[in-house]
Image 1: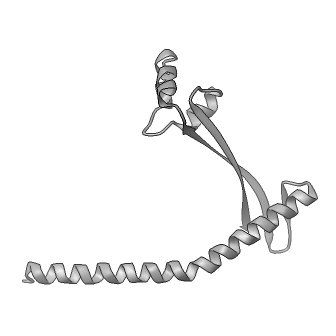
Image 2: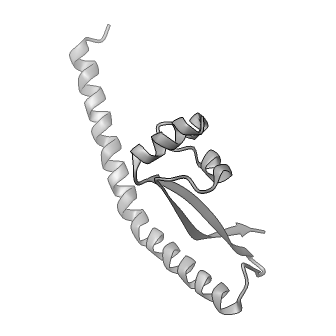
Image 3: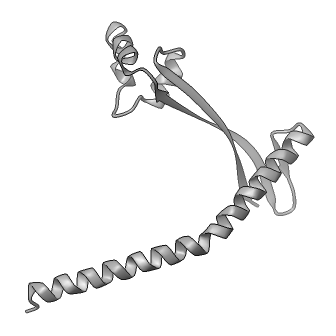
Length: 122
């Protein structure tokens, strides 16, 4: 039977090795992620120049998608709205995105929409 000290020692060694590998992968991925971001910006720029939301080529299709998020700026206003309108479907540990979209203008929320590039392989 393996004693607890040996188990702990092995665990720490594996945890350290995992962290080392994660750091190595992070460093390896940085230039790739930077390249992808530059390409996304170029494709978004090109779509804007063409005045289109999507374009295709032999390798695949690029298109824009609007991602919407809601951030509470004034929690008291949101809670008051929830109580007055029996809108408890808005509440999670964050405001429910789908409920906020359905209700429209909710006091205390800021709506953020970010246009992102997505690429599909053919």
